[in-house]
Length: 453
Image (cartoon, rainbow, N blue to C red):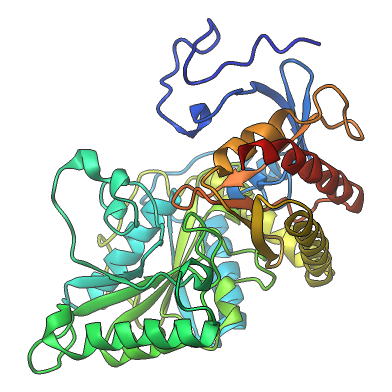
């Protein structure tokens, strides 16, 4: 079983010579060409099978499940497409179901609007913010990631996302990075939070921070936050820090926007990541798992009155494909799956326990791993060197010669902005047997990676 079909970004084959290699697919070698996907497994053209421990970066929460697509197609046999300016019962049903989920989590009535990808969803959220007041600035965390579109890359932390665009910027205030471990001199969470809040206070109390006027009036349109920073290193902000920041920016008149694109749909345990904290957001963005990766769709929920007609009238927002009936049918079917999954909290807790066990074992056994933890179906391993991408490569082929229960490797995730952090986020449907396979593959991967220390 050869893998001559595998190519990388430094070489091309006839199979890939017509594809631009500028996207994530060609970051590392080898690059399998996949032909099958089911459950937590992917199979490439060479017959090698991989255990997905990144769930398409959290998109395929329900695993690679073609039955969702089959069920959804039945819902649109009579209405296969629809102009964007026409209403459908399907769109109204999906909107109502999502609004009910947010009401259950927040106790607030609100409205839902649709977009395509995650970055477009963040752009839509900003439209909602700007339709409600004229303040100019936005606050985000250092290490935050909200997309790579030309506009939204201005909010994301990495300069390289926007370097080629030139030096135009929307006004963004960046708050102290909420990772306690990243601090080199504040050794306890209490000391870290105190120092970070002191910095936030200094930024927001006086004109020197560029946030308030000399009269103390705030010029912040919105605080945009992730309940767990994904690309920033799988960072769960300390509860006291995040809640105090939210409180301070509410005092300044800012709307609180929560980016749940990665955290939503039980990735961190509860339905929404913000449920780990004691505050109610004004606006929430969902994407990724909303259609389980089968079609592009995102949504923005805003509590009343922020998208009421007098503030967000017809014509404020329009996009050709946001009334795509197949995307909406898939979202409806995905919502069916979650509604029918009565044991989801217990099942995600089980995954968290198993991830915690295997991460603890890795940290204990291999000096290259510094620390780690799990939150729901999401794990992080902090490395002593910036080699997460290289460990990803080891994992892909670690069992090629000796498969582990039919798997020849694992697909892990590195977080981009934090090359010293390895992310593990398998499908929520991963089985006990597959978790055991993941444990073995992870141990083997770190054993091989010790040479990098």
